[in-house]
Length: 201
Image (cartoon, rainbow, N blue to C red; front, side, top):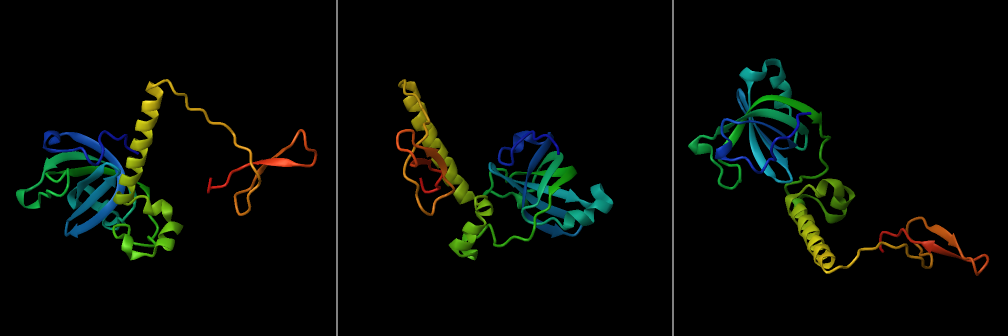
């Protein structure tokens, strides 16, 4: 695995000519004869990669078989895109990376639903594969908003000399919860409290 030098959302024209190393998920694959274009994605954005058959020879057949959500590590040189291929919808849409090397970190199994389209599967089915659904950009933005809100609240309280203390909570055992950790009562023999581990709490 190559040590990341940049994220997939930060490269621009000022980086042209630089040697970079990125890690991420394969978002899309486009075959154009002796060239394969790959959009590499991480939580910061996407960057277009260019694999040239002349640079990879026997490896090129493997590259053509890249699948969506494969995890790869790459190194290459940042180049300007041609005027006709500039993508204003992408933060990195003015550049691409000419790949000089790659490592396949993990090949993805066939996906149970299309990650780019939440309507491609019913909600209960998506929840079964929640770890995949959370890769969707919309949901990641929600997670970031939630984190920033909690962080701002904690920062405010901390600056005003509040202390955050986590204490155990004892209560009656609840049905349909997770397995309870039982705490015997010292005063009432044969009775107990439960340290709840219920996901609803």
